Image 1 (tube, helix red, strand yellow):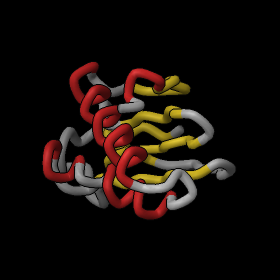
Image 2 (image 1 turned 180 degrees about the vertical axis):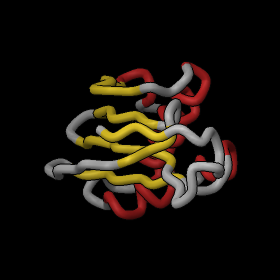
Image 3 (image 1 turned 30 degrees about the vertical axis):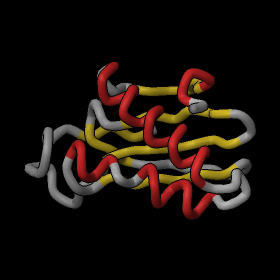
Image 4 (image 1 turned 135 degrees about the vertical axis):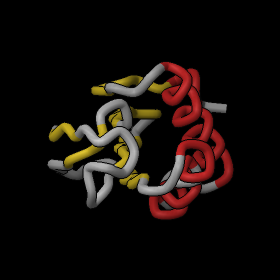
Length: 103
């Protein structure tokens, strides 16, 4: 498993949720070739089953982003050469925590 090699760039997630993200990312990287970023992202998105619907996952080596997310539901980290952006979004403030932050 590669989850112990995660380097966090930015997060506001509780530690337990971070561990779920690292575990899913590590398992996804073990299951798929590192060049198959779409399948890795699809696998990491299983966080929906653990922490409710509305999660978005972007995996790659070179991308920009500017997102709005629920507070406590954002992490940007690297494992090896891959960067992973995982966040929970919603179209209405009353879904989930009701607070949003933009990074």
